[in-house]
Length: 201
Image (cartoon, rainbow, N blue to C red; front, side, top):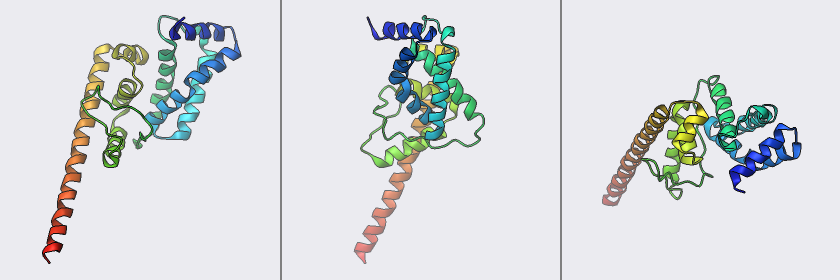
């Protein structure tokens, strides 16, 4: 039996009120959902609270789940909807920590080198600047590994809209990362000029 079938079997048990099955689903997804919500909101405690609300809805709305979609997509859709609702209440866009994300973003038009602290800071700042309409699809695609078709289903958006938002989000990230590199290069150049002047003295 594959993972998807295993999880759907768990969901069928959750529909019948099986708390042990629900506990197994939480074990599988709790950390992943908290991490996803943390990336979207930039607030760990808020991410934990929203994750708890997510799983409350999973339990009490289990009968609404239909096995035409993966369980993972259904759970993420609940989390994403809660995050979007919460973000509407927040006027500022917090910085999103990414130090612990093991992903090289190779599928995007930008690249990430975890050994470069300066670049990591720029990535955190750039992702934090993205509007949620772009940030959520980009995170789902480049960090969580969902396909564009799955994201469209998950967010209840047309596939073309999802593709456009991922493309636009990646372009913003690429542009902001390039700006960060240019600023850093100018700074490094200024420091080198100062050092040379000191040597001449």
